[in-house]
Image: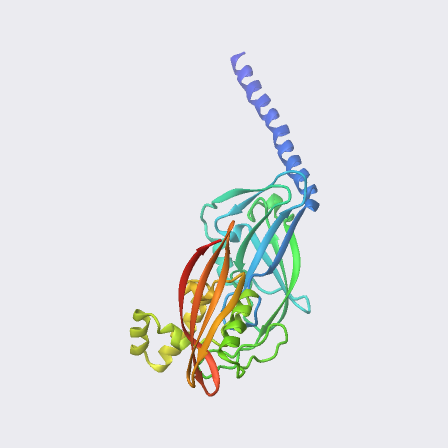
Length: 331
């Protein structure tokens, strides 16, 4: 009698577990049916001219909740388990996944994640390097679409129902023509024309550079910066610069440009001003100074700073070789 009671207990427990599993699957299916209210969008984080070289292609991924309730999804610490990019050529041929992506997903490691809650009318965004997901090492035109797996990529039951984003057109050019300093000459993203320094007076050079930074047009921002002079303005970097060979100096300049763009060094000159005003300009035959009042948005306040730019003229072209910053408080 006792054995039959125990057997009956396990039978009832197993039977009770089945509806619970069906309820879980049904609730997940119901969640997916509400996805028209969830919008996944992508855009280039710092749109510029992209080349075959292995420089990052940063894409901003945004999930917007347009529904009345809270939307929740899992976001893995290792993004490869939450994010994927479908990259295709114009002939609709799929681009192979990046080697680093294959290695990450093949690793037998525990997947850590956190649950993200997006309230009604709110968005959640993060930035990923497309080269971590797709093997885009050939020149050409590609179509890029992102996918988000709310229950993680390795969950087989849900792997076929990711969120899908809008599509972006990506143009990757052949290796750029190197300039006199060893750094590739830049092209205008808007016109695809080769950018050439013009004979602008010092105040217009500074204004051009600041406007380019406001629009996140890195190719124009760097146009009138003398990177060789800026990289050696720091004492430690200057000693390293003097000790390097010509090739070493070129690599150092290229690395400084990348670090400046990624806000690793000299953040003051690369910070985006919400507005600016040229206050004073003075210059002689070879050297000039431009003083600009710049304002920066910081939460609920506006920070004011006075920049003094030093410019030098060479071959009738003025470039920025140094700068100083004075904090003027907030308003």
